[in-house]
Length: 384
Image (cartoon, rainbow, N blue to C red):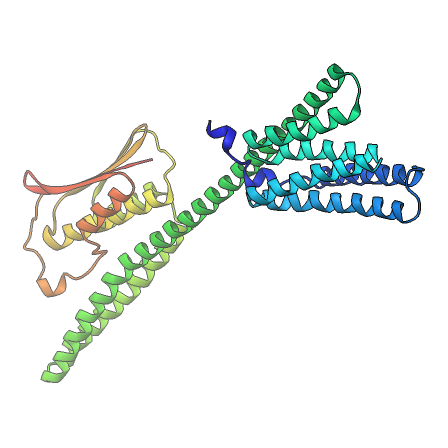
């Protein structure tokens, strides 16, 4: 029963989404009908002088009422719409009583069609029945023919209703799609900003904190009157941290733009720089910028940890390509010499395995790290 008592949607009742050509055609039809009625009124001998002026005024008034009816139905206002329909039907009866049979028939026909087109269906059927019934009774023709005419009016109005509801549904779906695309674009922009912020933070947080450590140490050495060589060592270390941080920032930005060298080349270079062994398994696959950057960061962090906690250890980097994932394993065989002093180990990427694990999980991957045998192993797996 809900469909019988519901209004057509606002999109169906409005002109939103109606092609310009369709609007011009509809306007032409209404102007043509109004012009025909006016010409018929001017040719009629039943109206002369002021009577003709009154007839023309009545027709213009009915046209204005139809436009007002369109506006109140657009806002789903039932009471004013019923009043306007009643006024139009009464105006048709008055015109018929005055002898303007063609204009009265036109007013009743338009009332029936507009009611079927724009009112809740159960109400529209009643209004259309009254308007078309008045038309049938006033015509005085064959009841069967007039009944067929009245049925045609109802069906025609209902066909217009279906057409406009289909258009309104299409327009509503199009608007929903546009909103979804805007929301998707905004979400992608936010994700991209978060990604960039995370990369810059990962690089700069370590670099700046390391510089602060060395500069603070230099300040304390100066206050104590220590040897200038020690102060210079701290300043040089801080400068090196600044240089490394700048290089890391440039690498991060280049990776976000997709301008960095392939991941495999980067891993080979990193392994060669550390005297580590590099092994690739599987056929190389194309990686997303985020996945490639994650592999770079994990390698940097793992190699940094080896330098800090297992200096001199044999290291192996293993890159594996599977059908839907890429894996990385960094394994060391245990320290061959004592770890460096704590105050001098603040170097390298330094992003922390916890941060790397969070980064992997954001991509839907996993990171595992822990002792294995005499050494330590870091395993990363991310989807392609």
